[in-house]
Length: 258
Image (cartoon, rainbow, N blue to C red; front, side, top):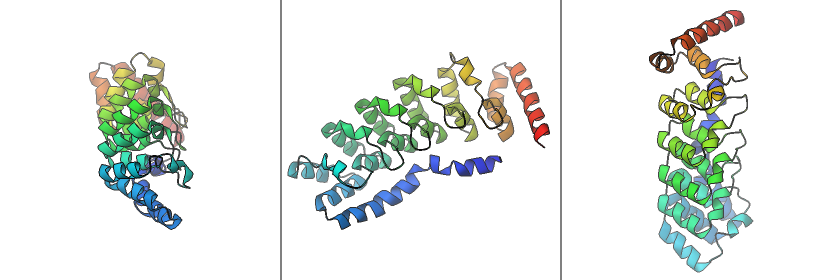
């Protein structure tokens, strides 16, 4: 499979914000308005603008409004919207009132942590982790955890935060047996790759894991994608023998498939 095609198939994975923004700011709120819940409309509008004053007024008016979210037909919560758009004060206020919202999933099975991680909102990520750190291991409908989104988008600070809180999240394998390291190479994210390799030095077998598409390790994939920076890192790390072997094996694979 051509690498360009592989990337096109992954577009939906790394762009939760594109679909989410259009849905949250438009279709979702319009549907709620048609449902006739004025306070809920105000609630969702406040989450989109990050207006904590409106949120507090709504809570004072109806102390149960945060719990009524689950009674609506909509999978997205105001916390999803707030986390996606980086409204820290709004996120903290919601979590203080109802920390359970951190575990709620949207239509794509994404938690608020998935969205904040993809967008690189580090303070929102920290607040969400404090409320529910197990969200680190929630798989969305594509089999991705928040760490995968952060790695693909090059959110180094978020990657660091996630693996400190849940080091075992680095061991989660995607469909196709790809690791988070494969994703870093595929999307040319060298800084997250360096951080992850250093944190996973004790997992030698994992560093050499092969995906199911051609049985590629991260170095094989780097050769195929011509990721020179990745290859140079190993060269400078005096692992010339490994580099030569990978180059040889990759050229053999390419020759046999041609």
